[in-house]
Image 1 (cartoon, rainbow, N blue to C red):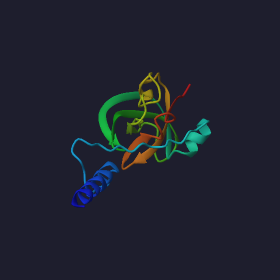
Image 2: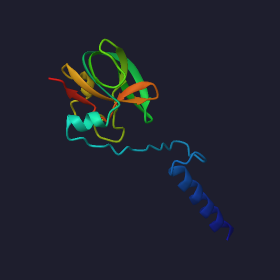
Image 3: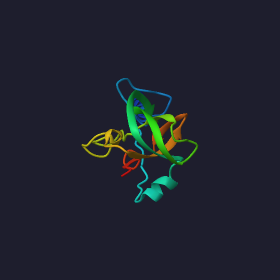
Image 4: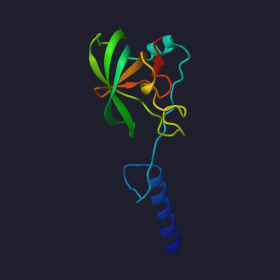
Length: 145
């Protein structure tokens, strides 16, 4: 009887740890949550889902930051045109390129980070704790031409 109780308690502890609860953690077990990204069909939909929309021709690498518990590339962007939000032309803003931590390719395909695409770029942005980030890994950056 005691052996069954020990096994049952062990299974409960294992289940709680694998579920990612903040209580019990097993060594060498990492829990990762995956986002369910909104899909936008048009730039109008992207703009409606954004807090800011800007056009830029200047994108400079500026390190990394954690977005949704995943390291993402960050860029210093000079705003050419501000189409929505509390940003003005000429402003320099820091933009994190939102990545999909659970996909085969963090930015949707093998082409890589869309922030490194040909400029000018139209960026659809959301304020993430004081740092702007693209709204999704797949719909946050579009060509502005």
